[in-house]
Image (cartoon, helix red, strand yellow):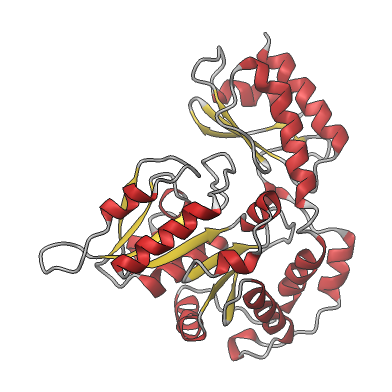
Length: 343
């Protein structure tokens, strides 16, 4: 990708900083399949402690981390409840069914505006004539919901509903760091509400690769077997884990900068009536239903003027700020987009 393009497609496009690369080069390593990589083990212990859980498991991708968690909570033939726009059923290639034999049933896509009463009405009890519900999954922040943050009170009510129905709760926390910074909710407070979490290091935190499953010691031990079965066993993975440890130490608090940049972009394009929802974190969602341009046309014109945006559907697009986008580039992108939208 040309360095002169302003890449607002995703926070996954970040590249490791010079200091992060130094940490990677200096990492102490071992064979992680044997459980002998000290840097991986340190990362897993650190992340588990941050969320108040017993253990964590380093995985090469967020999709794998999510799918390991779902297999830990939902046996084959049982049911997962989640949002119709959830990453686990939208972007993970049917893995829940293909690998875990998991049945998925969804509530209408509402992003972070989750209604616990709707979920409560969907929970199916054990019976020999229905598929039993075994887990509920939520996404924090919500990707296709425009980076929305599910309120803490909503999550607490969802936990109460899950306990009453004797089902587990999983959090796809790929951007839970953004929620933590946006709302000030401690990570351990989030952790206490979920049986398992997946947390990503390669989005806003800027590591080149890696996510972790967080949960009880027993579940994580079983997760290691599932990870190996899915091809996720890694050898000298400490080089990657070192990038994650650097990101946790240096890149969480600075997410507030990304949120401020996204807010500036949103303010610039708000007069054109294309914002899909209020911008809370680093994602600016665009609803072009009433705009003269569709999403592919907007993306093509933006690219021609030096900015890359993500097309999510015929009339849906997205801008994402991250640590590799400067203040000057945000201003330039805002100028470019407003120029295009006022045509």
